[in-house]
Image (cartoon, rainbow, N blue to C red; front, side, top):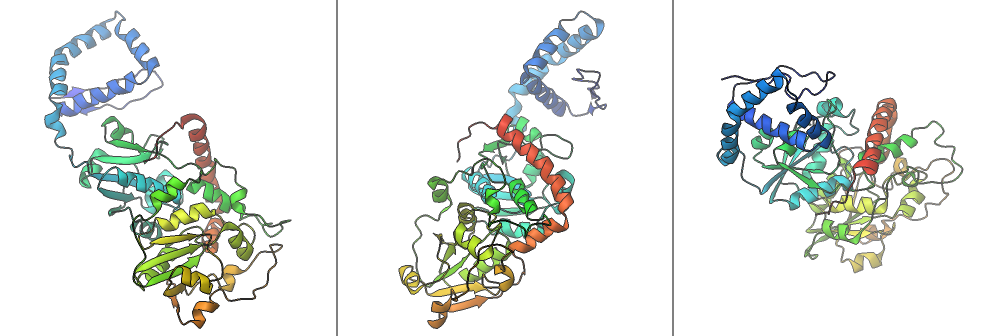
Length: 446
């Protein structure tokens, strides 16, 4: 049996709809239900439809007769829908979330954490470079780097690569998940549509709170500031985090608590590694993984903004201390974090934390190409090796940095593709501004 729906819901001469033919009665009825939900959500459309069906003309009368023929059958279908819905996985403990995960930040990690709280098993989809290019524009980090960051996150149980940007019910079924989770902002696909509209209409969408004040867009905006040719001609040192205007990043003790590892006490060989961990990337994660492999309990020291700015110079750090601490806490190899750790590892620090081994990557904070400061940044004298004490005590070890990637390399990627990233930033920043001014409402954080 054929169910023609040509021009169904064509409410304006400016709307063009293709011919659609349903050969499956159930799909046709589901289409009618979704169309009815769409109309009911818009008061203007409801009024317009009421006016249309009251018009006394042959086409309206004919449509009314046709609908009367299927009215009771449609009613029975809705009442007996449970038998059809059994095809949907009823395992509510498996939750799916997807994303680009480009330049991972605490907003990404907080979304993943909240999604994990919705069930027992969290499946994370990762869009390919090509899918991101098609829907959002050029990513800064490549596919391998983005996948590695997701796999290192402590709340992730399973990963799925090459995930579609606009997930469907069939895709959710294929990963054995009933629900998809996403923030309260709207994800727009390459067709200009809400990427999750279908899943929302099917009741398979869970809303989680978007983390204010941090996004890949805002980070790229800061990095674009550093690509100007006159970047060395600054009158005084400044931090990029203070330059870009954005909604306030709300630092709360609750979020640190939620990110922290609870009820875990130091035991066995305690390993310590420190750094700025700015623009968190795969090189950081691999160093943390290797450091954890050398002991039983890993403590990570994260330097404060003033210390990072002092040694690295103007524009640094890109991310503030609170953001960098949350990023490190989200990694499964990390047991504890020292907030605003001292640049120099002292004997008192070693005793206070019962540290057995101090670790650094071969590309460390002492690398002259990393600590080289820009013109007119603060002047200082390198008078002491920060690892002098652990070296003297014979508890210092370097692990190979297999990936020569640093914050400066990520910035260089922005410089090399400045125009593309600038165009993407312009589009994304307008979307973000629209979210904060027109869409944002209170959503309780999980």
